[in-house]
Image (cartoon, rainbow, N blue to C red; front, side):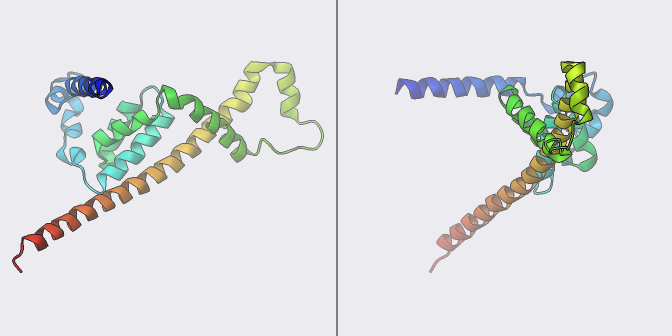
Amino acid sequence: MADAAASRGIWARAWTYARHHIPTREGIERNRFLRPVAHRILHPVLWRFTRRSVPRGVALGVVSGILFPFVHAPVAALSALPVRANVPVAVATTLLHNPLTSVPLYFSAYHVGCWVLHWDRAVPGQPIASNVAAHAGWFHTLVAQVGPATIVGLMVISAVLAAVGYVGAGLVWRVRIGRKWRRRTLQRQMQEPV
């Protein structure tokens, strides 16, 4: 009983903190750095939750969260403008890439990149890259192999996850709307006199 009350208190405090620190439309209008583009960012189409804007926001958030790890929220918000994606969904989806998911993401991106670039194939004789890497040290290995493989892997993973997120958000939207319509029809049927 005490654990439930304590956890409810933690969630209530977290919600209160988030509600007070999430920027409002008025706060964005007053921000001096955003004032030149505020009329575009605050366009009502970008803040509505529709069946087209939400999947676009999910896809943009995933791509910008993975490819731009340090400035993902502003990139997601600005890239939502030309494609008319939902800005809050795009910014919220970037949070999927966080300190807990960074290590598995980069590890899998490296392996996906090696697979895409075919760096795991056996080459007859002694390959030039391994001979150079043996003499150049860790920096050359980082720049010549790990970096390109990780970048290619991040691009592939972001494209695949964006497509999955787009389709998944569209399916969730359809299921949710279908349930609402079924509930409304059932309520109408129950209210009609027999």
